[in-house]
Image (cartoon, rainbow, N blue to C red; front, side, top):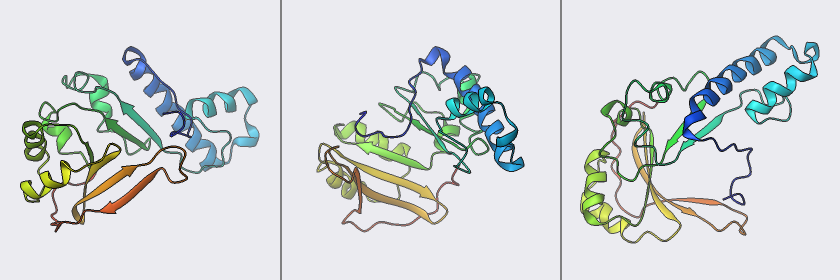
Length: 203
C-alpha cells in the first residue's frame, strides 16, 4: 500500500482516533487563520512545525488542505450514536475531511449514515445473497440482474463505483492498477444503460 499512497499518512489505533481527530481539526482551523490573516511570518518556528506536522504539510502553500480519514472494519465503531466519532461524520465540511468507512456488510449501518453517503466502492468477492443486501440497502436505481452481471465479472483490482450527487446516481467501473504502472486508477463507464436518479443530497 505504501507504493500506492504517496500522500502523508498516519496510522492511529481506534482508542486514540477521537483525540487525534480533535487535534487535527484544531490545527486545520489554526492553519486557515494563518492563511486568511497572513500570519506565517509572525509565527514562531515551533508553532509552525506543530500545525504543519498535524496536517501533513511542508509549508503553508496549500490554501485549503483536505484530509482523508479511513476507518478499517468500521461497523462496530459506528453502531453507537453517542460515540464522538459517529458525530464527527456529520461535521466534516468545515474542517474539509472526507471519511471512508470499510464495511463487510452495509445492512448494519444506521439510516442517518446511509442517507449521508455520497460514494460507495463495492469490491468483488461477495456471494449473491450479500450482493442482494448491498443492492437493496444502497438504493441503486438500476436493474439488479444487469448490475449483478457486471459485478460477477469484476477483476481482482476492480470495483463498482456508485456516486450519489445532485445530478443523480452514476455507476462506473474502477480499475486499481499495479503500482509499477504510471496511472494508479482508471475510471470507465459501465457498458450498461445507467439511469440517472436524484437520490441523496451529498455531504
